[in-house]
Length: 194
Image 1 (tube, rainbow, N blue to C red):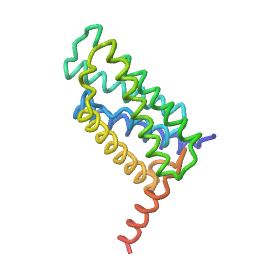
Image 2: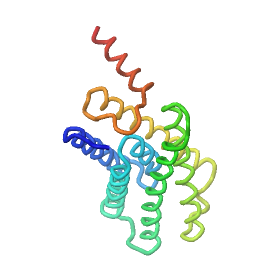
Image 3: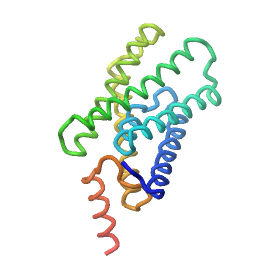
Image 4: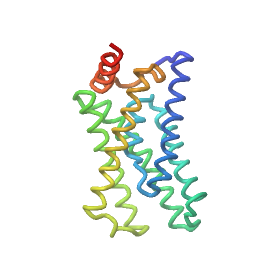
């Protein structure tokens, strides 16, 4: 896909917005960072390579905040968890991109499915790593349910932000058009102006 300089700039701005929100979420949620939600949104709103780049940025700012501002210990288990989260980010992008390419359903249902699939991969990788690094006791239904809700809310918020960017033409429609959200918001804005 060929991009004009303006669309490339808009995609870069959208990527920076996602990384910026990664800073906000990292400060608020620290270890409960909704990486799967960010990965699903990045995979559906950016080209393949850009989605991986944005997720690398989201992961990097999360780790910088954790180690730099929240005083994560510089020990082997913590550094290993950092690596696990980096792997998880890539796995979630791949999962969401696979859903986008191979699942046949409406756009909104597809991205919701991608978010759920990405979350399942996220949790499976973390659960597997917890058997080696410790923390299996944290995988309870109550804890995982709360983390899932955080991912859903983060994903929904980021998608609304994406739709606003498309409507205002600050962000181009790149990979998937999410018509129900975009058209609903466009209609509400048009009706309000009338």
